[in-house]
Length: 523
Image (cartoon, rainbow, N blue to C red):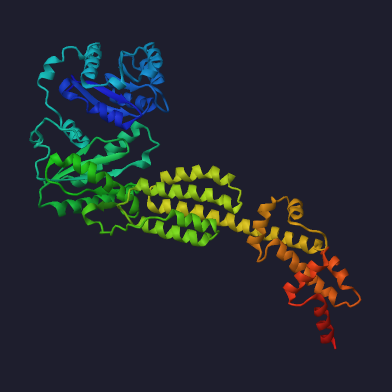
């Protein structure tokens, strides 16, 4: 296949790359898809290893866009031809790439098989090393990777899978794989090298006359292999995989191997991969202590259809029943953490949304949430990066503990502030003290102070002030030399009759009757 024209696809959208990959039968048409990248920087790393003849690149991408990528690529590898993908609105950028030596461009909205093939053929004809490859194409035989790639993606293949019987001679299949998310900061060369060494290690444990092993080329941070074995060898295969996972677990503790369900026909590969195996890979999130997860051996966990009552949580928080609200939340999260079939993205999204809701509700606590609002993006990022369920739950717990501390601190401040209010009232009770005057002195909004006072004392402002005044009045009534009419003025009442009414409400007696009782008690 040395005469095939090698093509590299560069686009930040995975679905676009998949669409282009399966738009035509590449090898049958004389082309070979050798790789795909999500941005120009990643593509430059891959070019040095793959040495493609043609690069198909998008214009607008993160890290390094298509314009800069084309310029650097042509400066280093002038022999590589470039085809640019663009939308109508990006045509000005496309024109600038032609100055770097771009061969052609394709409009994304009009991308279809014939158009792509026409541009590819015209571009390949410009490459001297690919002249005279027509005879090779007449004898085209699809590779195993070509067939499997089609099946995995869900596209129908017009090739009889029996043609690769030599590669997969047995009647049973299963998928083996692991996520390599811990390599996210590695470049393409390092990831490719790591996968190759991992494949070599695995082949040592699976080398058997009864087991056939074939690595499937997938997205960078995903390692997947197809195992083929006799139907009587399942237990033997599982034993081999247990031994392998234990040994590799010492070298690569971050990796959890997942063994999918068995299936009987290669034609089932695509459906098995998309409908089952991708979900099974996520089970590792819920089993952090395992080095291997065998789908058929997982415990049966009843699906608990208990919906989270967000209204209940918010109502409890608004009532400042923090402990009750957080206990309800933690019980629900604990239940979800035990449901390993739950979608990992949905689980993380739920926790992040709860963090957002709680920060919003803290406004009712009169807590300064400026810093917490800034930190929420750090919580969201860490939640997204959580590798196992315990990390995600611990992150939520850390957030709740911080909120508890903030509320406790605010409660302590409230206690000090309330005491200051009460002390002031005890000092100035004899004056014409009003809620508005008190609000002004302590820089409160009057209506807010009214509700604040009621929330932190048993009585409202007026009742508490009357209580102070009547207590002082009872002390003064013990001194018979002071006239009752003078006492009412001394404790802050300008209306004597109103004083008498309030006094009787609190003590059950009129001021004069209260004084007579006191005098009798002295005798």
